[in-house]
Image 1 (cartoon, each protein chain N blue to C red):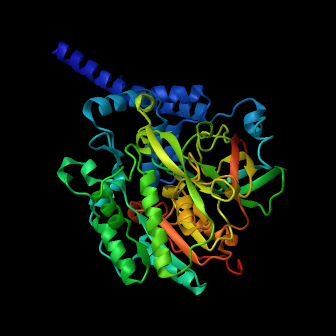
Image 2: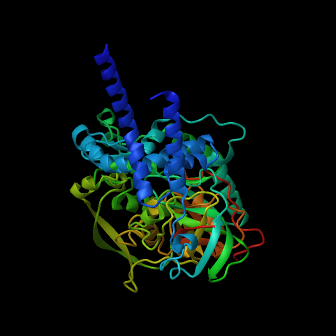
Length: 161
Length: 384
């Protein structure tokens, strides 16, 4: 097998993997992010776009568990009320997939989001204010810039555009 | 010649398969689970140094193969070789230590520049003290010693005979705070004196935190200093101590994330003292209108909101001062995060005369989000 052929096969395989990885699921739930949990938990439910992941905001530390504040542009409010179209949401240990995030300290959270990426659309069940629902450290790269309360993410599903 | 070529081909292909199979299998697992390929995250982030490091870390953490192999490897490393990885040090007599904390103890202080920036604890503490002084509130800083600073002899036989060491960074911080007129409680000296008299350990064996004895000693020292300064008088609420026994697998042991080690570990039996109000028989509870606000980290949380409850530093300090306190606790966040939270809760300033600010020694260097200068209140807000 010559080098050119090997390279072509490798590139083709990478392309196939990329397409398979980025494919949309055929069921409607992944497009809307709707499931029985996100529609019933928390007092506020929104579909929102994750504006960015600030550098150093999501990290893993061994001794302690933190919530991290992330900035969202709200696309649709399904339940409850919010002020404005930008909200700041605290996610517990966001370096973990949402399904793996609950632990003995914070039990009532979850979702199907595997990892946080800027630009993603999330359907979230929220509580507010965060201080009433989470007693640990809150890493907030937007300190002083937030307008309004900080929200606490109870359920976070990935939604399509 | 042909044999040599075949051998080298087999070796090359075998080697490529060995290093590629983990990635290929990971891709199969992710696609099978309906998840996007994590390897492609490389193209979804701006390729900064931090993002590339995070990408590498995320790949490692998410690896199916690593998850299968790591616990067994770590268990054998721990049991056979007494090696606990990059975060934990195995000391003498079963004592465990948090390695990054030990590194802080051993490292040299950085030279102080004219503009120390956001990571200078002294600048943040002095700014906080000045903001409090404008409101007529006193500040008392309490550095909770790292376990290894109080028990260096349990870390290594080379420190046998030593009952306490204070790292150069801590010495530098305490000197600079003293020079700036910030009041501090020297728990290093207090714990050293108590160790000389014998008695139960002031720290837990498998955990990074202090024991109930350490809590009681610290509470007495802090209360004594507050009363000596004449900032407030002792209150008139009598508290009693009720024994409560809990069993706890230490945080340092749990941090290894080796389930088999946790299952086989014998939890420490911890004899706590729960603080009870003599008049009502109820366990200690905070008062948001108290004269004293205590801020801190997990050194306040342990035994207080953790089991058995109302037996931590907050309750014991209240017992010593004969009055309930207001408290705000941020696990691992006493350097900056707890003051950010305080900023969002201006109601907590009501009636305050004293702020006791506790942080663990290692946070001088490792405090989450550094040591930012945080205003006391949002502009236009007043708690009075």
